[in-house]
Length: 129
Ligand code: THU
Image (cartoon, helix red, strand yellow):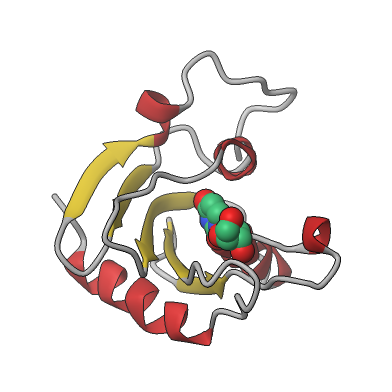
């Protein structure tokens, strides 16, 4: 079931995106097993390769606050087209949960999927805690 509240938070945080180069504003909000919510937006740089995705900023924010288990993540993109999380963010998500529900969308539509579905045959050295 789509977590609309989590998606609304992702949409709010996209307003903070620093995306002067791509104009692609992304917001992510994740829910941990303990029920806390962590947020992130994309942050770009004049040296383009240093830019960071919204999803990974939300994950790093969670870890920095002492948590390591994700149950759901919502991702909003300010675009008419729908986008799923990039490959790098899928791999970083896999470190912190096996069974993560993913809601991605824009102003018109929200789609539900799961990490299992969009990153099968995952490379892991440790089982997620
Ligand atoms: N971006 C994200 O924040 N998440 C993704 O999953 C894909 C891409 C950002 C990175 C960059 O700031 C902009 O979108 C264009 O790639």
